[in-house]
Image 1 (cartoon, rainbow, N blue to C red):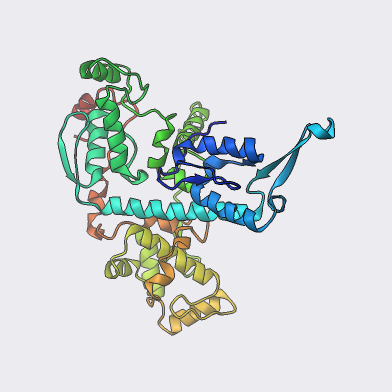
Image 2: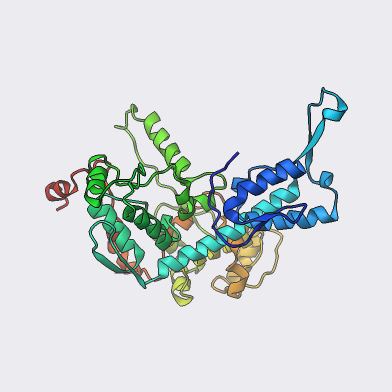
Length: 404
């Protein structure tokens, strides 16, 4: 069956058959899968969840040259109750096999690393230059200024800038559709620009089609949560809201998520408190390290996860010395003055530290980009619009707002 293209990036690397010289370009993936089934009786499970299909196929092509197919694949016998001459063996290659699972995870991690690096480049890029798709106003600097303008002034939002990757290509795709007089939501084609514009406004079609898998690769969520698309995540959120719509919220109270200190079990409910505690109680100044090393957002994430993991393993992160327990390691760090001593950046600036040591580590939520100074707290949210659900008459809302 045909699968949606998912988040695999289009490329020139061909898809090779695992058994013969057959090969096809990536857009014709289904042709190769059909060839494997009909000619070689092999089925690859969950192909759409494989981050890099060309590399996956090359790996298994090499392994099948070294060992028999049956060493890796489950055998499925068709017509098992019929005559022997009508029975056929089919082979299933799937992640139940530990080697296959490890390969899929490695390819996923490598793709995630590439996407996060690309996203960081786009966050830092100040050479962005583009016209608005709806009013031709010109935007230079960072991509967020254009995305926020379209959400605020034209009620057209494709998501927060930090949720998007390959942004220029995404905007090119949307612009091409509009230039072809195609509605971005229902994808019908119209006779002229005025008719298209009226249609999108009257039908509230100023959004993209969530079922169009062409957009999957532009959302970071698709690379973080294997097998789950941004549309499914959005649907889950909508279902949760629908389930709770009759609930009485009058007595609801917020319970802040506490951030835990890197060195002890102390918890604080605000980032100022947890940063102050680590500085006063342990002499650890994350703000200072961020400034001195000019750490980007994802580098801060990796540093925090690195320190967490070293202390969890009862190891001094400054000199890598191991101890019998965490308490001994912390005593050593304090006594030797290693609390602000970091190893070479190459030791902790690694993809494995993108992932938290502890689940739901709230300290990671307090991090920010190095270019954002501590004194800019009150201005940080200004470029991120909060759009109400009912934005049909945005100008009227602005004029009557108590916030005016």
